[in-house]
Amino acid sequence: MTKLSVNINKIATLRNSRGGSNPDVVKAAVDAQLFGADGVTVHPRPDERHIRYQDVRNIKKIITTEFNIEGNCREQKFIDLVLEVKPHQVTLVPDAEGQLTSDHGWDTITHADYLRETIQIFRKAGIRVSIFVDPMVEMVNGAAETGTDRIELYTEGYAREFLTDKERAVAPYRAAAIRANELGLGINAGHDLDLKNLAYFAQNVPGLLEVSIGHALISDALYLGYENTIQLYKRQLA
Ligand code: PXP
Image (tube, rainbow, N blue to C red):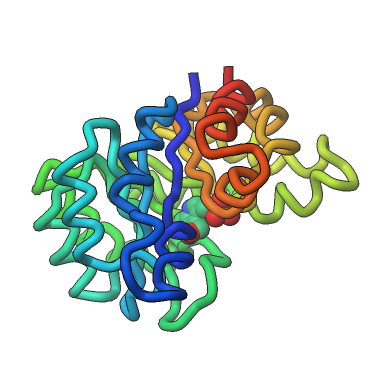
């Protein structure tokens, strides 16, 4: 069954808007696992405008489910944090500085050498590595050459096209996943997945191991409650 990792960056954004510690991001992480999530994801950015580096340390101390840290590995600060905290998984994202949200995957061919070296740093520390990629077979082929354990398929395009033609929307993801399975790469996915588009994605992408979901899940929780929302997302993956 596909695992659900809850990205709690939005809770930190809400907290930061007022200073102080409400809502409590460590509690949000603990509650996510209590309410049935299989993991927690955080995405520390260099300016710490969402999750702060100290939050990441605090969360690692207390959660027992899978911890996934995603971010821009061009920042030495990010590499140092991940090596210090030692999460179960690190997801490498090619963000530019100040980027609003991640909006593209790695070009695994152009950046093959860089990725190979960086991935080794984390793998040597016993941390599983996933790299964010667009749903293109050539990028999956390139990923396999980097030594990564997994790829995370960038699903913004799927979410957009799902509204008009879901079969067309999922087709490149399915093709990318079939290739990743042939190459022995694990498959994660994330970005703009929600209660409407998640089940169809999970049913049509073979070997999908994990999805990480933040924005829609936390938004739904405002209306449906945090515990109920996590359960509803889990049910989409059953
Ligand atoms: N995966 C990556 C690499 C991301 O950067 C994000 C957003 O922080 C997500 C998944 C989750 O996307 P969303 O917040 O749209 O669910």
